Image (cartoon, rainbow, N blue to C red; front, side):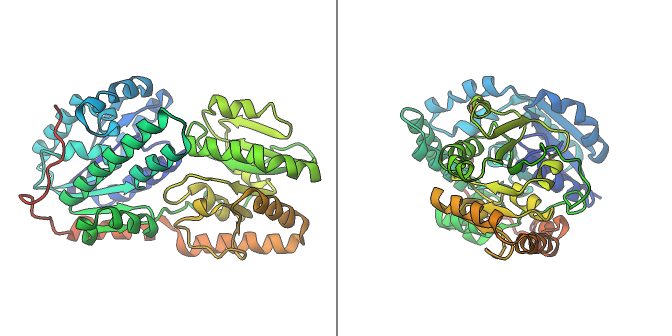
Length: 414
């Protein structure tokens, strides 16, 4: 086996949130083909107990603790250097030393980067074959944040959108290939970075369909309760925004028609704004649960009312894999190849959401069951991880390195 260096911005285990699910399957896939040397940050103290899982499948690992609050404060220094806050957030001299030492010791010729801020650690190795999984166009996510946040936060988010896009373009121009989570995401970046369009591609998220499957799960809900379940990391702002909007604009009208309906928010680390929703009638905030599948399996509907989103939503694919009817916004549907009305349901504004939930639950049970079964069939046919990761193999093995002399240099740490 050849050696390969993998750089991941957040420890890819346990796979309990969107980016970690993708990076975990990426790591497992690469470890079947290469001796993987993994460098990653650990931003959740609970994750340290899982380091042995990574050590068992990697040739070597280097895990660096990252305190989010301290990192946010440190990143503000980027404002004085006219560069991305994300770059400084993940800047770490010890990480750079380990990368350089490992590259030299093992003569590594291939580097895979997961998330743009980790590209800074490849600066000294332009001769290596370098592939980056941007996942999402993060700069556009910051632009969307700026549109929804009040001043002065909007100014900071607008600054980060601009500087991060500049950095993303520099990375794409100097790497052998740049990949995204969906073709729409890749198409957006081709528009933003036309000079690198020929080296931009995508591979979609997959689903562990053996794990996320219909089954005999213990019912976590009270008798007679009709749960509308939302699953996700509840310290993530787009998820926070989604549940706040649903709780304010959709749920009251639904419960006025059917008091048995309950909005159940399932996910770790609920922010204060999310916890406050539990005081509202008809809302449950669970925090971390032993098995999210039980909450999905016994829900009336899985809902994804996201108003800000980038890339493919794992929560949608996982609910579909469990043969659960799913109702989504257009933003949550992006990049998912599914037929609206036959494999999932779509609604945009509050009125459409109220009507869609009401119609789905009042209609013939057989129709909803047919939609749920079609959803699982779609995931089984199109979203296995091995099939989804195949384009990455081709990029790592066959991508032609660009002219390094002509490529713009990435920022080097001051």
